[in-house]
Length: 220
Image (tube, helix red, strand yellow):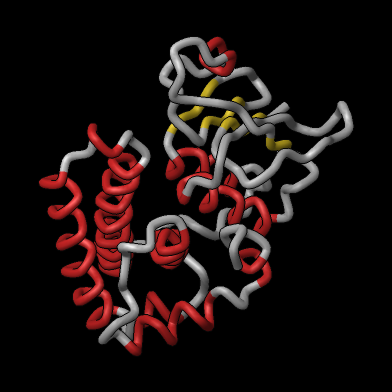
């Protein structure tokens, strides 16, 4: 059995022989895993279950003590944490991985682009966590810091988006970036579109891909 524990838009009932998983509300990190599940045709092997996290006694802590999502339990009962590790595991299940970084110099470039996207995503996640706090518990300093980081990174990506690795076969840099850009639906303060026509056109094209179109935020 394979179980994914993470934030997903909804739970799917599965037959007993299918894998099990769980999640809460939509998370960009779970969205990346769901895109890979769709790309690899693994829907029959992964079951998603919505769970509640960020409470003191959430039942999911018995499986995943950290409470971080996504979380995957392998057929052998081993728990895997972090979207990158989970995606690598899922990608290799059929013995034909397609999301590994390429070799030699192209591999370093691929990793560089994924890290750029991950930096933007991590900053937006910090921002989002602040917004989920009670208004009198939020840090204006942190929110401003992440707002300006997001704007700087949008400028970077407007310049980087023509990179062949961002326009070729779907890869981890592309998946990470589109998950990042889709965060605008949960945080109206995020604005990566203004002044970035190339980035906007890139995103508009990529979200037409079936695996991504099926995993857009609820308000799409």
